[in-house]
Image 1: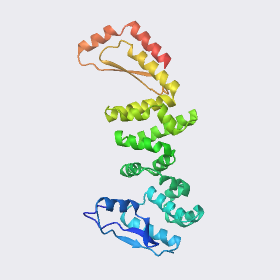
Image 2: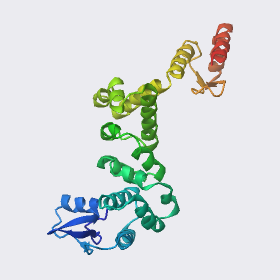
Image 3: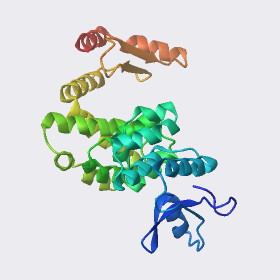
Image 4: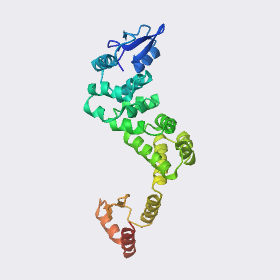
Length: 286
């Protein structure tokens, strides 16, 4: 969004409609100007019967003069054209040659679904400079997830990778259980978890754990078993056990810090045969 205090205003593009004007392009800019009470909004007025290809060229020329073309911009262009009786084939033939190759990889219908993303999620993806694949990954999730995503962003501000992980887990769990997204959110009590009074990081950790356990129930139970087993091993206070919680690597690591000769002596005293046997059993159970 242009800084209205230091840069020229970004013009919106409109066409005549009855006795008013219809915005063809510049929805976010228009909202921004209204929020900042800017009385005179710059606009480019195209003829009512302007050819499709010329509309597209005007939009892209104006936009790229000010900022990079975002996936949501393409989505809104496609929706406008489709709402005005343009077929997807016609839109693709006219629009796609004007886009770079990476943006041509997605169909018009996939782009149009991005228009259904909540504004808070759109702004989040823009602020995070989300790559194309993240836009389309989130844009193709069921719209029933959108309310949950909005609350999640407001309460916890997850990273892009964490948000994508949670969205993937939600959809996979719903698919396996053959239930709707809204029913799954209710069954897992995700909304009460988001709304509790814990710190954002704690809420986010709890939500990830709930979803992980629901998607990988057997793995989750095995992780809990191994974690409890490791905690029961009476290691010296200056030692820690580490292992791969995905269990792809069947190994354990002992990290020990010695700061004095006394640490060495205590380590030798406490590493008894019983401790070694418990470590062997842990290694077998991984």
